[in-house]
Amino acid sequence: METTSRLAGESEPAAQGVPGARRAVDDYLMAAFPWYGLDEAFTGPRWLMRVGTAADGTVEHGSTGHGEEPSLHADNSPQEQSFTVVVTLASRPVRRSGDGTGTLEATSVSTAAWLAGSGLLSCSYPMEMDRSLRQDWLDQQTGVAWELADDLEGAGWNTLSLPVDGVPTDFHYRESEYGWVLAGSAQEGVHLGAYGRGMSAYGLGFRVVKDITGYEPR
Image (tube, rainbow, N blue to C red):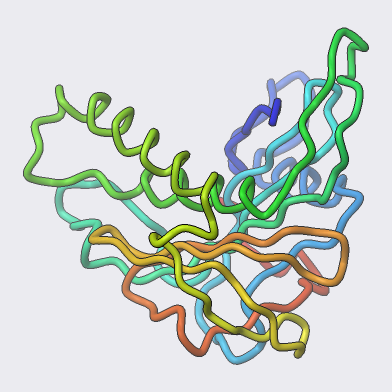
């Protein structure tokens, strides 16, 4: 999928006169599809993460965070953090690219699984590993995540049923030493991915976010 990612809290040039926090929320409001997060059973902190856009600026996907914001700081071990991130991905058919020079692949549950898997890797730096080796580790693990996402019916995945807008929905689910990843589809024309650590995926529920401004920009 040909998209570019932008950190939700990234500030625009000062000449625009738009604070970074306001810009982050506006990015989400530009989407033509509903955003998903954990349902009302979760009462902890909620925050915005990333928006992904196509070359023409169309919002394609984004993430909402719940719990403790992941950090790679040495004084905050990744394995001790507790969070769940929900990835919402617009369901798109094969289509022409924005510049008319080619086509973009259709999005799928596998795409959502890939986004969730790569998201988990981005906040899973093994603290005992030398920093100079991190890129090699990321490249290797990213390749594994891609292969797993491309084979959702394989032995690396199990089935987990969780409510989406109150409707029991089957997800592809897997655990690793770095946390867990799941992927499935919602009723609103979107695919859902999620990843987390320190919070069990069992018992989670997903629901359309009624007011995205209730999530704190990061």
